[in-house]
Image 1: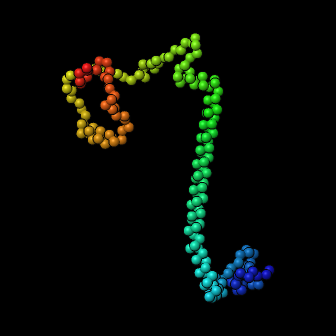
Image 2: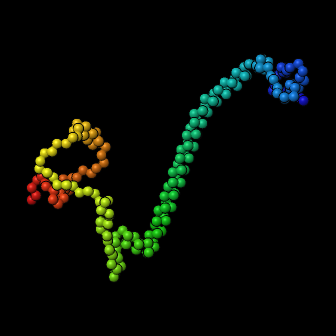
Image 3: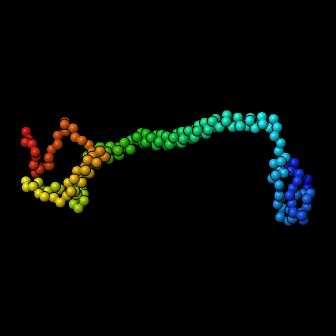
Length: 190
């Protein structure tokens, strides 16, 4: 078997192995003496120039390659955004096509605006919830001061900390707050 030119000329083998091929016994593994291989490398001026050019090429190409990879990621994310937008556009076009149908418009007017055709009678069921599901009404307010078993400091601290997290609507001065029937008011009504 001919030798490959990239291996060194000397191969370390056991005494029983065929020394001309470099193979050992029947296993087929090849042993290379690393010291001989490294000893065959000769450093020269040409080798130093080529090594310098390779290092320079790495320093020049790494930033452009990273820029290329960042731009490919940005392109991929923009293509994904375009695909999501296209799905939304298709959905809106389908809805627009539905609104050109007179039957769909009539059904939407019946559902949303409670329109009826002449001669029809519509029954709207108000307060159709079960009595058990209805919220419990407030009891009457007493004039006497009552003692509660609540830690007022904890409640006040919790109220202060949670007030910034609440998502409630604050009524404006223009909106009139009317008390429920039977509730006493703090100010006299005009």
